[in-house]
Length: 154
Ligand SMILES: [Zn+2]
Image 1 (tube, rainbow, N blue to C red):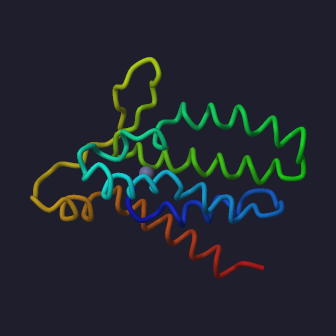
Image 2 (image 1 turned 90 degrees about the vertical axis):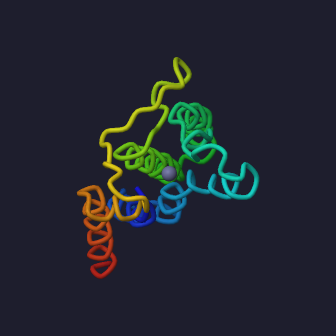
Image 3 (image 1 turned 90 degrees about the horizontal axis):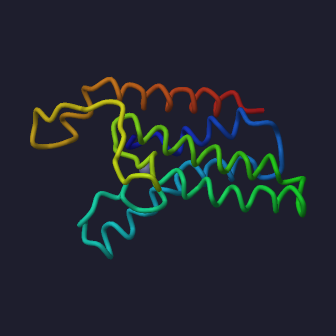
């Protein structure tokens, strides 16, 4: 997924049960894993694909959620829907990345990557391979759904 993480977080936040700050939490959760691009470009000089970083590893976020969600439940129960929306948006991000990108779903048991669809590399420019593929149409559907929800907001 290239462009639809922010609108997917918006859709999730709009459809989530109302709670304080649920929409910002879903928006942030929807894009947070891709902040690893800063490290990817500025520190590692693109040496590894950014899906190798821990913020794209589902088990990492499961461990964080296993710590944070009980704490929120005990100390700030009012924000539990907000926290669950945040982690749901993170999970949604990683699921959307799994469609055509590699994700380490089986870590810590193996570092093998999983993806659902291989986009054939017919052209040197990866965008020319991606845009005519149905995966890009899925991105457009997510954008359209987010736009529809935005236009119909209360
Ligand atoms: Zn990502």
